[in-house]
Length: 315
Ligand code: R5P
Image (cartoon, rainbow, N blue to C red; front, side, top):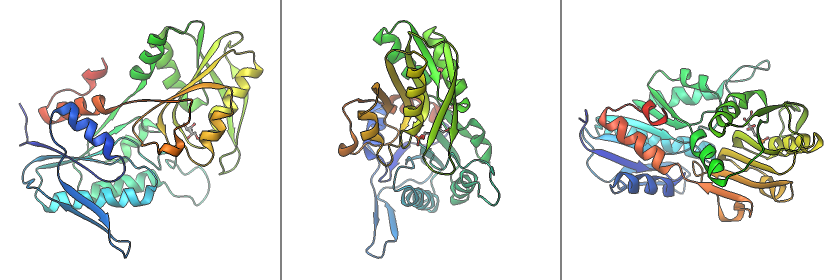
């Protein structure tokens, strides 16, 4: 039985298409609200329907322009709180600043923690997200966090493709668990590539490959693709070690800078991503295939609203 009154889903401007697809899964209409900027660059939000005591879900991945979309989310939460929502869940399919999760240089911030504080202080009661850069980011929140994984969806895509003689490859140690989980679903071996990031820039070097990749088709798995530096360096290291065709799948298509051009001109045959972030038409390269997380998020929202287990979706 639902613990809260009606379920309401609203969206900011970060990925309205995803919010519509989530609503289609849930069989409800997207809530009416306006979110825009005045000419003085101040963001304005107005929820155009009664949400008193309703179970409100605000869909807003932190897509570029990242800081604007964070502000939109915070202002939407504030508007919902002041409109007497019964419960507010921030649905943030992509959590930007996730890589700023530790003080690994002197005098640097932990911005992932700062953003978590902002979301809580604004008035969110829960967070629903997908594939955080590091699971420990959940601990930055003092409110319940449901983190969904795309690993089964992406692995099943490759299972259906029927690729044989595969080696699932983590481009760095951080992606090892993801690669291990993927390789278990596919019942294929996995390898790890040793990665070095040069300074605070996008430059990446990949060195040793740990695992047997010679003569195998490689599937690189990661949480996100930014500049593309990581997957390109990984592909080069794999080729140097005798790998054959190279496929790549990541959850979040950040696709910053020249990423699309770099992927187009690389050895990578196909890049599978999800729609946690929108891909503008000019970045929709010929090698990119998009799988949708709308049904996964929609099912999680249904379960959160109804007091059912979210974890059971992945058992
Ligand atoms: C970093 O550890 C992440 O898991 C990704 O590997 C990284 O964000 C990819 O960034 P880029 O495409 O710029 O190398």
